[in-house]
Image (cartoon, rainbow, N blue to C red):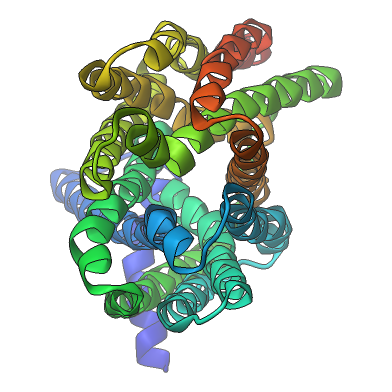
Length: 435
């Protein structure tokens, strides 16, 4: 045990350079070379951690996307209507959203390095139940277990990304997020080529990948726990001062909530009902509709990867502003064009809309310093919650009218991006406070 502690502390004296720059002068060439070597080792370790949590985020979101992607099969197998489909999504999204801020607030004060593995274990059990479900209530329970796993995973995983960022918070958040978006893109393909041809029982195959992710997250938990020990030993807990007033913070949070509503209500229409729209409006096959959904989700992944680094370079407010409002011309066109153009338009829609979330999360973390877990839980929770409510509301609307009308109405949602003008410029505010 003592040997393990010494090894952990040695590793984390290196890793401390990721979050706390050294203030001691280099006295000689050999010391400088040693610091250079430590920096390189720290960068390699941090990159490995970011890749690990990005991979696990991919697994987590593959299961979520898989659930959405097998809706046509579940609809036929259980004779479900659109309202019941919406309730499945609502059940998943509510369990994935309501717990997240609570977990984030708790882990801000009491970090839980192995909560990541526990959350993935809940996802694994949800997959097994989903593969063996024989009734609608069992589908709801399986959806709730997958949602709970996601709720436990996201706040702590986002904190790990920030710890391993080396100050490049937007880049780290994007790398973390892009894993989830890749998983979301994989889900439809997995449904089209694995689950749909073989039936509901094939969902159990994905529990193997979830088990691998659990093992990876146990190792990440070791790094995370050792990192916390090193920071506690050094007595270093740096918290940035927020130059904004409480009123300014409140206004900014309200604006961000409006943007989350706009983004995730619209993405709920695409994620939950895009396949139905293509099947009913253009008469395409289920498998072809899943491929179209994959194209949109792949574009969504690329946009996520770009949003964070661009925000690091030009400012997050500019990225947030463009990433919501910039999609409006394309969303307005989408319900009025042919099949080919629908597919083509979803590419810029996915690229532009997806660039927002990493920037929003990091902006909110800078808005409320010292509350990384709570902010991550709140905004991931809001994202899931808005998506769930949107899916349920839009499902009811689709039953009462048509999926086509749903897409026509949702096309105007990105116009809410105009409120981004009200966001304060945190970089300018911080500079004024230092001056």
